[in-house]
Amino acid sequence: MKDTPIPYDIVQKVVKKSNLPSIGKASIREVKRLINEIEEASGKKFIRMEMGIPGLPSVQIGLDAQKEALDNGVSAIYPDIDGIPSLKYEMARFCKNFMDIDVQPASCIPTVGSMQAGFATFLTFQHLHKERDTTLFIDPGFPVQKQQHRILGAKFETFDVYDFRGEKLKDKLESYLSKGNIHSIIYSNPNNPSWICFTEKELKIIGDLANKYDVIVIEDLAYFGMDFRKDISTPGKPPYQVTAAKYTDNYVLFISSSKAFSYAGERLGVMVISEKLFKGQYPNLKQYFGTDNLGHAMVYGAVYALSSGTSHSAQYAMAAILKACNDGDYNLVEGMVEYRDKANAMKKMFTDNGFKIVYDKDEDQPLSDGFYFTISYPGFSGEELLAELLYYGISAISLAITGSQRLEGLRACVSLIQKEEFPELERRLKIFAENHPLQ
Ligand SMILES: Cc1ncc(COP(=O)(O)O)c(C=O)c1O
Image (cartoon, rainbow, N blue to C red):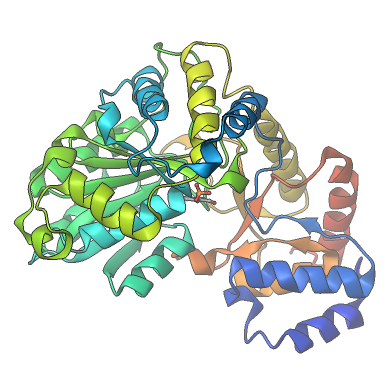
């Protein structure tokens, strides 16, 4: 039994009591509960890196607009299902200003977070074609989106992109698409959990293949603008947030207010559908949605049935924030660089103490510092490492639950860590390294 920052026997007792068959396979919420219990039993605070919660206050422009909307009485009134006109208008402008793509306000649909955008999309796409019934995940990915598929009884296939970066992505994708059962491809960019960011070359491969096989690209931009290697914050000027939408008209984008504007609590995202798809006709939809038009099915079928739109006042908040970004009055990148700086410092602490960064490159470029990073320690599986770090008061999640094949890896989230905790993190990592010397 080693001397560890959190007493050994307390951790053991709480883990045993939790009845979790394997900590490495526990969901994010289960890990969160376990850490809460260890903190309570030991009286010691963890360095908490398990949950991807925004660690910054909400953008004030949004709060002001939302309060004003509430004072004006919007809480008493159902919002239109397809969203308030100012949000739709500003989102279309935002797409032009920060991605250089042309979208119509009509096809910008606010949802209850990107989470609901996903659910509505998966349930609609499941019925697009009689003969094509499967989503392809470019993993690692956000575990809940697979849970959504399971709940819907929707089929999916997946592969870990780690070994298929750059030119290799083409053959790998084609090996799935050529089978003829895939209707859409989903990934997040920047990626949760690995923080890889696809390069222009890779996005072009995805877009070109979407055209060739007539599949839809579902691009989850929950971390919009957070590839901090490029400052995309000037409206209408390059560099832009990279997107496969530059290379195909078959796309749906999810743009979330949660991380970019620290608005997670109000549950607001926007689904942006390309004009071609929004107007597209799919005969198979008719029996489920009473229409064969995809845009109509999505709004008046899926989103209507799920929640009849989303929070009226929060839509005013996001409209105001987007307007400020579009007008150059709010700099969305400056609002988030704290994550970059924290990741930079924390990654150094881990690597100085023998840890490795698992996903470390975008083709030949070192990864951006941002909201998440991935770690491993020689000789440990991810599951073992997660369990061992509990004794050191450090929490993360296992990459095993994200569709990654890098089973040695963990995902660490920087958002909740305060700079004042850095010395303690460093101290704990040093003890860990001393207790687990490398050859
Ligand atoms: C990749 C990804 N997609 C979607 C979401 C959920 O976003 P929202 O809060 O808008 O529902 C998250 C949140 O962590 C995420 O990481």
